[in-house]
Length: 53
Image 1 (cartoon, rainbow, N blue to C red):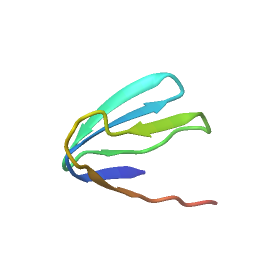
Image 2 (cartoon, rainbow, N blue to C red; image 1 turned 120 degrees about the vertical axis):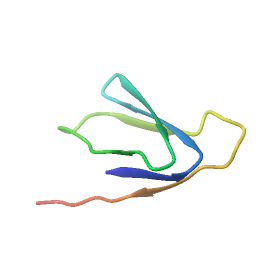
Image 3 (cartoon, one colour; image 1 turned 60 degrees about the vertical axis):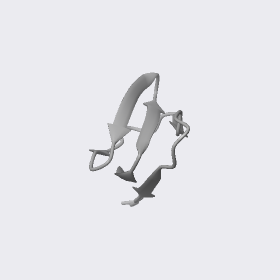
C-alpha cells in the first residue's frame, strides 16, 4: 500500500498508471512490476507499507 502525504506521485503497476495526490492511497494486486515516480518539480512525501502472509 502507498499513501501520499503531500505532493503528487505516479505509480505504474503491471502496465496500469495511477496518478495519486495528497490523501490518496493505492493497494497492490498480485505481484507485478511497479514504478513509483514523482514526475513533478515539487517535493512529494509518501508512506509505503508492506505485509507478507
